[in-house]
Length: 294
Image (cartoon, rainbow, N blue to C red; front, side, top):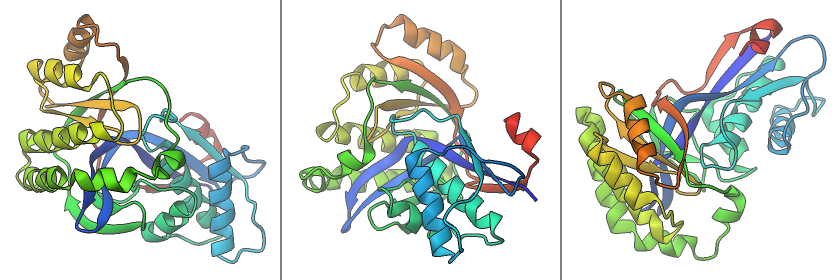
């Protein structure tokens, strides 16, 4: 029997920083996915290096006699932008490898395998979580995201997550932002509790601007000002990547906002319009032909 594993990417992080002794992120899962298929007849794909390593580590963890198994993988998440493309790939192939040998991994087990490869996002968990990405542990489950659209833009270039997180000054800089991050977290939790995009947007904007001393984005200030004029509720950033997101209520036309932002000539590239999601990783039965149509 063939199994399809669907794992979401992200628009950066709602919040990321340091507070109460931990470096953490607040996940921002979106409806763009990596798909992994296992349990089919025939050869699999040549996987990217991190995904290959994830399969090998999973099979070793499960004490399987072989460290290779046929898996197909496809993704619609841009690489090197801070959109959790590696996390989506790694989490999907980990579960696909486990399912192919009759096992099913918990999200925590997947997080530990992913962390052994690189500092990891946690978009494959259900809902929005506060996640210690250095220790691979959930700090708390925050709740479900209210409906929102996110316009995603790219500031240019690529960021290597492993190189970024190995910076000698990173923890010191994060600690210097702690007061802002604590304030952002308080606003964010209230926003989730009350379904308030205004509070959520205020929180994510604080985090995005605080991150300027860590990874500066020239376009952030203009993007924020123009986006808010057009009905946005706040900005999201990839704290270790190149993308920015504008939070929009569902009732606003994302297409009209996108066209208006284009007219401002912000030196930023439109990537996608997405929605925040809460379902985490999904496992379904799937034929090879159905996978090929994804």
